[in-house]
Amino acid sequence: MELGPHLHRIGNDIVAAYLVVAPDGITVIDAGLPGHWTDLTAELATIGRSLGDVKGVVLTHGDSDHLGFAERLRREHGVPVFVHAADADRARGGDKPKTAMGPMRLGPTAGFFAYALRKRGWRTEYLTEVVEVADGDVLDLPGAPRIIGLPGHSPGSIAVHVPLAEAVFVGDALTTRHVLTGRPGPQPAPFTDEPDQALTSLDRLAGIEATWVLPGHGTPWKGSPADVAAAVRAATQA
Image (cartoon, rainbow, N blue to C red):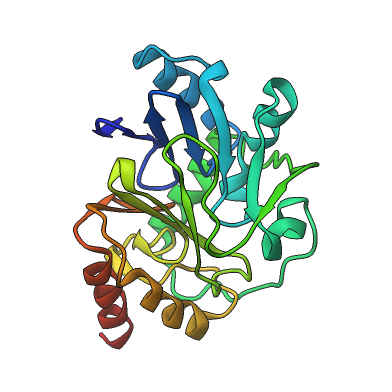
């Protein structure tokens, strides 16, 4: 799905990943679920590109529903996978703290898990090698993605700012569709390690210039990062 000249989404409002399309290649932001491999290859074919054009995968954090096809790309095509140092162990399958599920409704929750099953979410392939990144890094990848630390959902949660695509990718720092309740609109994401810290981290979005704010779950947000951050805070008080 094309969002803009340099910006494509694969997946849907339940689980999404993104492609930054540049003349010198493609950067993948998050890797969804293993079954999104088919969506990736189909989207590449649609735009006349191939897996050989993919130069790197940047993970917004190390949770399983963002790892998807990353290890397959690394193993079969030599594509490096970048993750914040604080989430590197999580991306390799290390221990993850248990978090409360919080509010849920049967229909949306069943839909989330059914979709994960269809996309082979039960077959998580953890990373065996990662390239660790840190807050402030600008990566030598198509679109020159810049790393912005947003700890809270996980210790190494990041946003990825790509001016070429006029986009900031926020992973699970926020959501625009709660996968367990189906509630639409900007709000905190479920399964967050440190909810208060995640809200504080949203302050770091205020100064970013972007047209798109793109979460791992939910509808793409077209508007300023500062506005979406304010909307998330308002949702916590509603």
